[in-house]
Image (cartoon, rainbow, N blue to C red):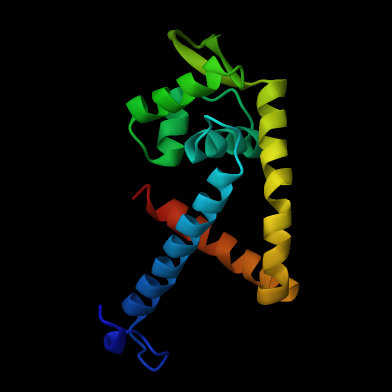
Length: 158
């Protein structure tokens, strides 16, 4: 889409509006991933961080397949990410008591610490955004983005 054809707020086409919203979210996601990755420990990727963050937010004890579904990636990609975390001692794989061949992913204390340190390391960068964006705008935007996440999460299973 050329600059002259971009949505200027006058077009009520709902599909176009949602496309533009998700396009902005995607750009924001790319910019924030790049910033986050620049603050991670050497050898860790954004994929490692997001897996650790997921385990902290939603709890561990998930199977690699559960995580692959949550991240919408092939199981082989998730297995590669988990292998990197396990090699660094950030997670451990345990036998699944419900499936003799399966494994469960457990977050280690080191994994929790690495995740927390990464968030602390990026906090000054995030704080520097507030004077330009506004704390009130950030607080007002959060519920809207959470609502959008819930809607999109439900839609992916259809």
